[in-house]
Image (cartoon, rainbow, N blue to C red):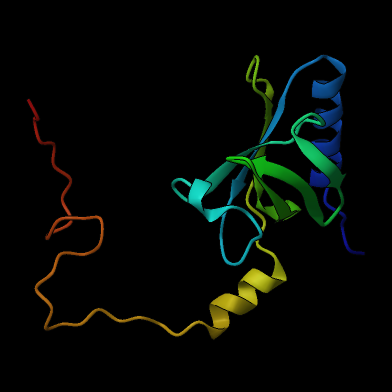
Length: 143
C-alpha cells in the first residue's frame, strides 16, 4: 500500500492558521531543476514567497503543486511549485511554522539521470567556481 504524504495537508493547515490569525504565510522553496518561479529572486538555491490571499491571485494549495499569480516588481507572474520542493512554511510576524525535508520528484530524478556528467579539465589552472584553489576557507579583513 502506497503511503500518502502529509506535507500538502500540513501546508494547507498552516496557511489557514496564519490567515485566520491575521498573519502573513511565507513559503521557503528549494529551487532545483525546472520550476516556474522568478529566478532573479532565488538566493542560495531557495526562494521565499508570500502566499497570503492579499499577495496572490488564484492561489491553489494542491496535493502535488502549489500555484498562483503574484506581482514581482510590479509585473504579474504565474508561479507553480511542486509540493515536494517546499522546505518550510512560517508566519512572517512571529516566525512560527514548520520545516520539511525536500522530496525529490520523479521528474527531478529523471533529469539527473539524463544530464551529462561534467568533468573538470585537468589542464585548467583556474580555481573552482566560488572557491579558492585548495578548497580551504579563508577570512579576509576589509577596512
